[in-house]
Length: 250
Image 1 (cartoon, rainbow, N blue to C red):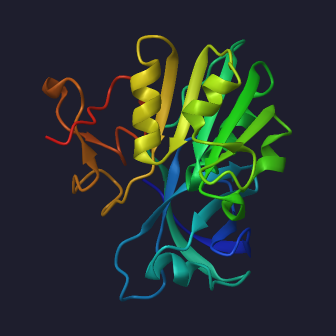
Image 2: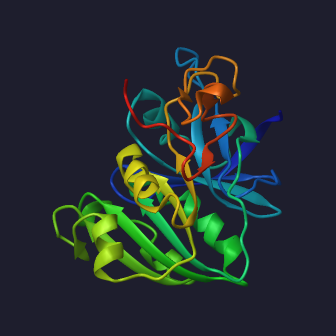
């Protein structure tokens, strides 16, 4: 577990509430991993877990939505300031080769799929289906189009396909061998239940966390096979194979 004080070299808005932050440094993250960012305000004790958007030998980038006090504070940080970053942590996406790959993203679950696509594009054929609430929330369409065909859906029909990602996959009759997905739990549940047993697939959960390092079990979820014990999104996850998670509330 590595903690670094990293210099911010970029912190800019992509929409009215979504920001991209880039840190200087070589953190050697895998696609699908996340970092835990400490807020400098001492009254905000918990680190904020944010998925890795991109990683190079010189920098690591995250994309986050302002949803509370912590991310609001994060959005005010200027270039040249430093923050404490723990990670990268968590499981990454398994890599495949010579496959037809479907990458499905929903809302703020789209950013970590950029680094995944970047790692897969050399020897796979990629199609993206990205779901958003409305046109104002659409992000990374142009950036992802460098790696494959991009289909955008919106719940209200204000941009792209009118409907959810499952309907779009069916409407466009997308042929694929492997599915990767990240986004709201309802979207992941729908993908899991539809394709488990039919396709190879991996889903990444975006969950609220407390410790972020597997100690507190605040982000634990139930597996289908209870004999394996509870699964921690921050430790065994955030990436799981299709068919691993039990979505029943009881």
